[in-house]
Image (cartoon, rainbow over all chains, first blue to last red; front, side):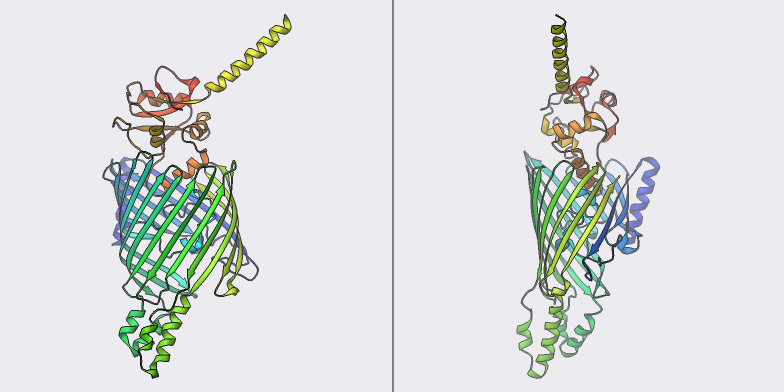
Length: 377
Length: 141
């Protein structure tokens, strides 16, 4: 299905080119970073790296007709050895001036900056706050309906997305995968003068496939398959809730986002993340500060069930259930200070320093300095 | 007498340069056939891609000037109330999310006037001093 979407979008983009112009736009983020001595943070070590968050991208779009547009985005990420990947490929049908339907592989509008996450030029940070934005999936294969309108000074828009999520990630040096089926996501955003308020609610049937977790689940399955199934994140309902508030009077701005991710019937810990950021625009310079927090330190789940087991297996079950959840316990915060310089109307230079503290394991504390060049054309 | 002449001409010169500074304000222009009552807010919406039609319902085609054109910065700051970098960041968000295409760009005032004169749906801006009879001026703040 996904291949078909990709193929048809590309084919349409190409055939559109036969009659109409193809618009080619691009963007690039070149980011160099170095963590404090003997530390690692966001993939950076104490050796300077240019690859971790750098990317180059080309976007091709063509109008098939008045109402239908085909768009493809090719992205080469440094973290992926600059292998080129079709990250987006979709068609948008403008039903009216206010409503459009988009189908294919597209961005899931979870956050304030989801849509332009990869376009460093569009925001003040070197990279969006990791605690909130560091989710493993940002794209969805499916459809999205966008509606936008205004009443007087009040502008508002809604985005309803439906589809499938699928993403690989690395956990403890091992490849893992997360899949979300029947994913539904509703986003509402309203702008009034200098204020912007945003709310998101989403759900999906989530399945985690993590090789390091499997043996533990299997061990429990040998004792009680039903409990093992409850503990595992296998086709369980995952929920996402997010709110954001922003004030921007063009001379200065302050904004924040709060998100909560939970998969109740699984070992996954409720994950709460939030940040506040503020900056001042002084000519071509925008100095800014950001403070962010991650809190996935919760009471262990399923302890009541553990207590009901006969004494001879209670300790083993307890170790499995507790051990698995404890691996996911996390609590940290980070403060960063940076500046953006608008070199030209399509180039920005940035620098920031981040101080990260891990409340669970102090050995993970680290500092990071990054420099970035963002370019759009 | 000579001194007075010099002073007068200096004074007059200052007046002229002051006047031309005032005239350097940008004005919004439309095709003479366009009878819409366009206010500052609708100009803003049209140039930010938030509105595709004039208040009367006819479709609107905004014509921008290139980033290095003299009128562009003034228009961005006076009418859109943001600097050109912010406008460019704003469009980058829309372009790379497939939500919009920035207005077509022309090189200078003369090209903007030509484009507006040739297209009844066009709307653009020029410095007040460049206005010709080929276009209609819309007063905005």
